[in-house]
Length: 78
Image 1 (tube, rainbow, N blue to C red):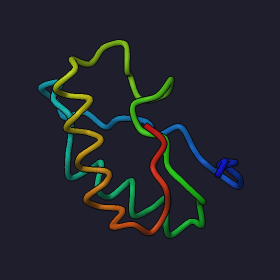
Image 2: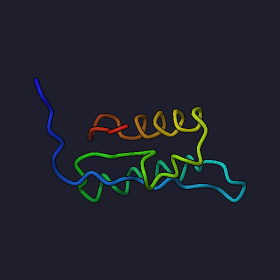
Image 3: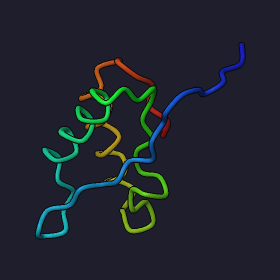
């Protein structure tokens, strides 16, 4: 079976706090905001998500937070 991505799938930004750490609360709020806005999927840690500036563990944590917050409502492309 093949899968074709359709609809609005934004490349998410990654929110940071004043210390330069990933702002997990801000990330959760962003996920909720995008889903409430009607997106059909989410693309965390992409070109708009500062992927080049993040360590592997930070990327994994971002994806974990997004998956937890989405709760299966829309697909995640990571």
